[in-house]
Amino acid sequence: MSEPFVSIVMPVFNASANLRRAIFSVFNQTFYDFELILVDDHSTDQSLKICRELEKKDPRVKVIALEKNSGASAARNAALDVIGGRYVTFVDADDWLEDNVLARAARAIKSEPSIDVLKYGCSEDYVDRDGRVRYRKICRAEDRAFRDRASMARAAAELETIPLFGYIWNGFYRAALVKKYSLRFDEKCRVNEDFFFNAEILRRAKVLRTIDCSGYHYEKRGSGSLSSTAANYSYELNRRKIAELIGLFDGEVPSDVEEKIFWMYARFCYAALVDGEKLSVIRADPLFKKFLSVGFRDINFKQRVLTGLLRKKIFYPILFAAVKVIGGIKRLAPTLFARLKK
Image (cartoon, rainbow, N blue to C red):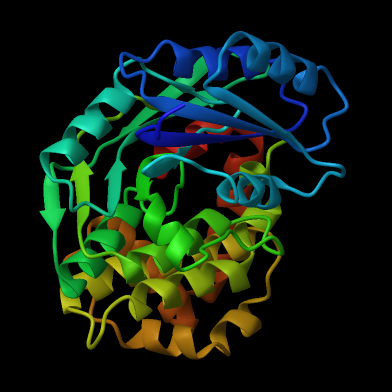
């Protein structure tokens, strides 16, 4: 088999309920020049059997079976050791693609072969226990190219406010960069590992391109997934994300971008408080002291209220009441919570 244009990596763990849908959304693409690497993370259901059956039917499919359950990062890393494509992208086993996603990404890259990282949008689908989509949030990126450190850093910060930068499955990455710098996912980090991978490869990239395509459907469920657990809102991990975004700039962060970054930081603070972090821990962080110094001139009313409650001690009784309300909405009405985050 000749070198495929893109290697598609799909980690699989006990995903038999949705696995065929995810795989066939890849097979049904209008772009065919790919290999699909399925990494079974020691599933206990029929996932590995499904993978093996498809491997026998299509030569583009490779299956890796891990000997013990090691997490999505380890599964992706196992695939990165064997990728054969010019680019690599990722699909999660409980998500799905509209049939033109690969074609649109490939078309953009072929029009500018110097692209190292390509990012696009997605549809965040909030799904109930019966599998019905209760709310759909379309996250869009613009058609733009970035060719210097400052503009790529700005793009990363602006994408993450949507949020789009931190996801791994809405990107194509030059495989030669991944191999040259031995880029891998942090297997000790069970959440946000996608974000840190993106930051590492962007530091080595010379051209970042974004396109207006939102055909990847990311299914978010009310419970049972890493993205819905308190671990996702670990203050330490999320403040590390903020530090990484700041670190992408070679020098001073422009004031308008700084406002966006520290609005994200404020949201992380609320998430941490909802999940039980102590305000005293957050206030002792040097990053919080930097947050206090940000001007916040170009923000809306909601943002002014929420940043103000965090910044002024006099408002702390109201802050703690707000945290309880936010926590209740998040727990009892996750779809409403998703709408209110907009």
